[in-house]
Amino acid sequence: MEDIFVARLMTTDVVTCRPTTLVEDAAQLLLTNDIGSLVVVDEAGHLAGILTTTDFVEIVSKSEPKAETTVERYMSTNVNTAAAQESIQDVADRMVELGVHHIPVVDDDEGVIGMLSTSDLAGYLSQADAGPS
Image (cartoon, rainbow, N blue to C red; front, side, top):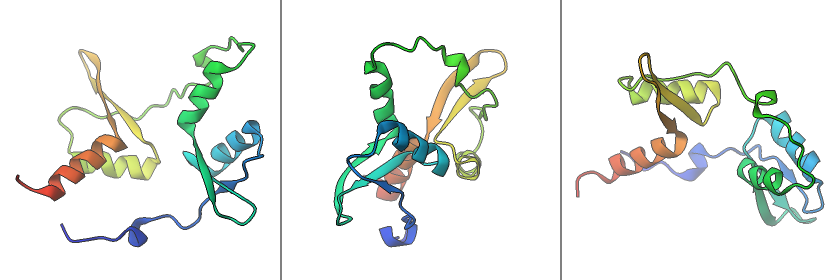
């Protein structure tokens, strides 16, 4: 695989917020921009930190008092799935097209048998690029 530099693949339209931004406003920025992380910058525009959707899992789990809202209210029900025998390339293309980071792998008889994530794909590409040891 040829060397591809970060500049060729990176996104340059970065959504940012300040350290003083309220978490509710940060969540709205993530949703409005359909992104998984916000770069937190100081007044000069220098990196101060990053806030990810994973951080919101912790925020919600530690919130008091508990909202006692069920998952059903927020879960996606139109879920794109893959079959175990599908081509990685086809599924990766579909993930990019749909803008999703996880695809459940299902079997007609057994139901959910796995999950494929963008991290799994990145690991595969990293190993493929390394070649045989």
